[in-house]
Image (cartoon, rainbow, N blue to C red; front, top):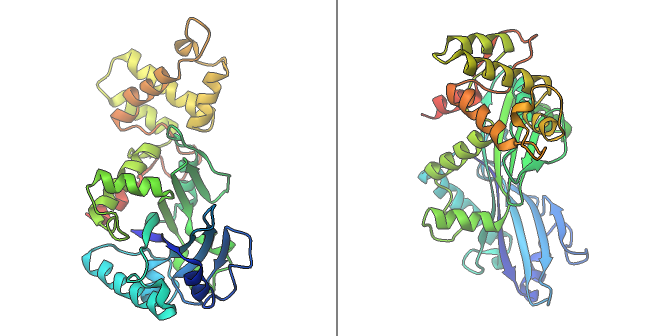
Length: 345
């Protein structure tokens, strides 16, 4: 359920001097923000970043923790399972590890807060590349944007939250992981919701009426709720079909002929433009095919009407607007949402 999390604390100059002596390389000799990977040579403490307050009254140290690796003492492609017992084990491990590195890092000495949380779920499937390709074509939520592009990853984000749906093997191979980890990563489709801003963390603590501490969001119910909401917003829950199979399903529905034709036309239009975001661009740019319905009197495009039509005539009826390639080995592919939450229920 959790891939990594980041904790942060404020230190005086004398405190940070003591901490700096324990690092594999000095952070004080670098321009800030200064970052160091594997800062203490301890599996599970992935990265340290030092920033300085504008008036140099405080030094802020952030540590990225990979919880399962910290607990096990070795790298793993699995994610950390959150429940009361595992969280307590993690707490004690982190407390003793930081205190053992330097007393100034102890939870009893400084106030650590949670500054980032990466929620992660994954399934094993032979269709990883297909799922990534379908995710890349999905709707991008309002205020989100594509973050670069990679054949093995669907990466979109806002100022505070990123979604990353990717081929774990592809990522592990690109990072040069050893063979035993590549074997673990084979056929793994990883889905991450990255809460990357302190503002987002504080919002969730307020939303769920939690104390503002490092461990408040280590709650399986909250993690599942937030992941599901994000997944539905970006990917949806409907199964994937080829165009012919989706058209057949639409014809089977108890709808008027006009509504059925609109649904099929919507599917064809989205499919012709390769993705949902590209379909919106085509409408906005005044493409000739199938657009009179979405032109306002002033000549502008009625994007909201198009989205409503897709929701009413496709999504609400269990038809995914993103289609499988006609060449795919079967005419239907189950949405990972269903596979994943069957495993978790």
